[in-house]
Image (cartoon, rainbow, N blue to C red; front, side, top):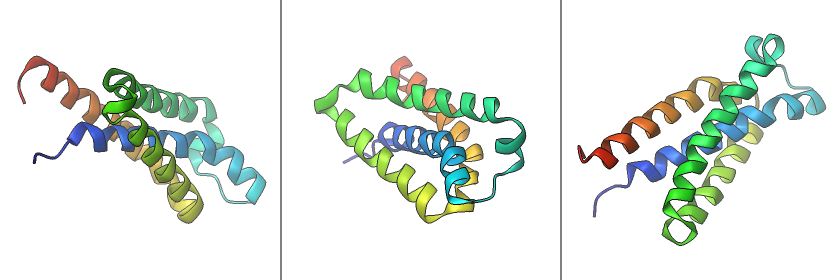
Length: 117
């Protein structure tokens, strides 16, 4: 049985995107420190988060709810909660991981649609 790499990349894109989007408000309430990018460039951070979430949701919509879409969303929310809640300051690494998983998702998806993989 082959590994569904798009499944995992979509979870990463949505989960790390959600973590990135919600870290700033949660950090302010909980008193956690903000990274330089989140403190000085909140709009850019939010833009990266929304782009990552949108790319992952595009795959969810393309697959449909019964072909893994619901499972991707559930796992992505779980990843976001874990990444932000458990890692706290380490959750700022989502600023690097969200775009990486998004570019990998889009590249792999394009290759799959084109018939390269």
